Amino acid sequence: MDLNGSSVPSIMAAVGTALGQANGIQTIDRSRQVIALCGDGGFNMLMCEFLTSVHHKLPVKVVIYNNSAFGPESIWKPSRSVYHRSKKGIQFPNPDFAAFAQACGGRGFKVDKPDKLRSTIAEALACDGPAIVDAVVVADEMPNVPHVELAEIGRFAEAKIREAILAVTGG
Image (tube, rainbow, N blue to C red):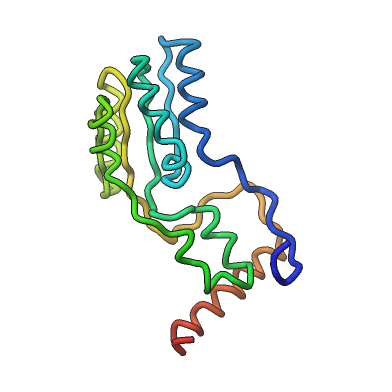
């Protein structure tokens, strides 16, 4: 429950587990390509797992959705009354993930233009060993969620209107 007694969405997922799971799956069958799709917040939580990929020469490829925020939290947080006071807590600067990959002994790629995404991913998939694709995405883009209750949509719309009013009034 939030401060107003509203229920919090129940579709939150485990954060920070994708690469660890990908490493485990890759050890079972090194002949198949394993790709971890991670949000930047989740990747930051367990980025040391990339060192595991390098150490064990696992050819895992990681695509990081880099929006410099905890994406799902930035969607659900507005429906809670304290959003305008705590928004900075879910936004953060990221390290250079491509440079991080190289520092660990893997390959790193960064893409910030949609028309370069396919070729960058193809280049990452073609290299031996582990690789990271740092894919910069629009910060406020709504992710595709499996199910949202109508009441939650209403609270989200209300929060966005409140946020716009606060932006205009300086409150």
